Image (cartoon, rainbow, N blue to C red; front, side, top):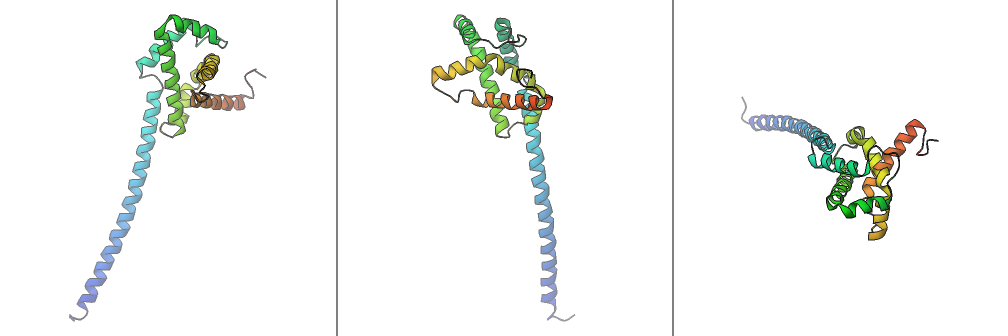
Length: 179
């Protein structure tokens, strides 16, 4: 073997090993990105399930309390601000329950907006009760906005409920009036 060609062979071998290493590194980075994406999707789905209220006793407790006082989930009409205020003035825990649910639904909407939770999963699990709750207490929300001077109060909750309601109306060809 010629000693003059040995450095060239070593350099060529090092180049081949480097190229193979870079190709392997590229493949590993692609797999890592896919794993990170898949993990993010899984976490969004997990968060969505947790938001459903199935695993949150305070959500269930608050919904029951509101239903006992306002028949909120079965009555066909919207509840007047005066009726809600009258009951809330008599029962501070009820006020806490209502504020908890409004904040809870607002947080769900924010999580969907920022892609923390999977909106499709949450919509499929909660659409009916979410829209119904918004429609029942809409008068209260609007009056609270006026009283506090805060037009953004629970705006994400209202926006998401309206979006889902409009999607539902588009699918069925009906609007709120049933026309």
